[in-house]
Structure formats: structure tokens, C-alpha cells
Length: 107
Image 1 (cartoon, helix red, strand yellow):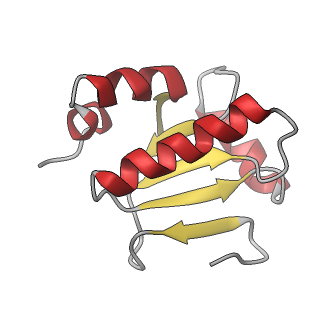
Image 2 (cartoon, one colour):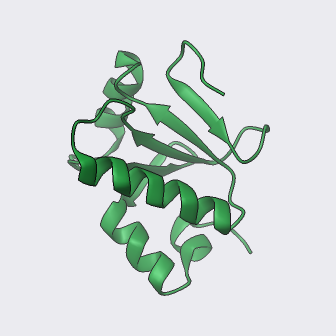
């Protein structure tokens, strides 16, 4: 469900702890593929999340940049509004079957 705020809720209607900051208009196919992969992995693991479209919301882009400790690239993963990491780190957690642990979520 899209809205004018640039956020899209996936998987669960209650406020999710996990947010994926990305772009709906990225011209970079690698970035789009990575965003989709993260969303799919979270869905498979039944982890509710919210997609935050930084291309549609300047305030969210500024917030992400203030909170991400200088990290570059999309998608960026946040839990409870704290930066956790980038795609590569998330991918490693999925491969090790430690997604919830990496995100700091209980099983």
C-alpha cells in the first residue's frame, strides 16, 4: 500500500520494527534487485517490515543520512530507527540463517 509519505507497509499492518530504506525510482538494476531480495528474504522469514522510499520523501532521505553513520548505498536496513547495515551484511546473515539474530530480533 503506497501513500504520499513515501512509505509502504509490507507483510503486516502493525508498525514494524524493521525498515528498509530504498528507492522506487533507482536507475541501478543492481540496487533494485537487492531491494527486492531483502524484501523477499524478510517475507520468507516472516519478519514484518516497512519500505521507506527515499526518492519520494526528502525528509526520510535526510533522516536516513543522519542516522546511517556515513554508509553509502541502498538498500539500508534499520531496526527500531537505528541503522543496522547494508545489503551485503544482510545477505551474509541470510546465508548463515541468522537473520533475526543479525537484526537483533527474538525468534
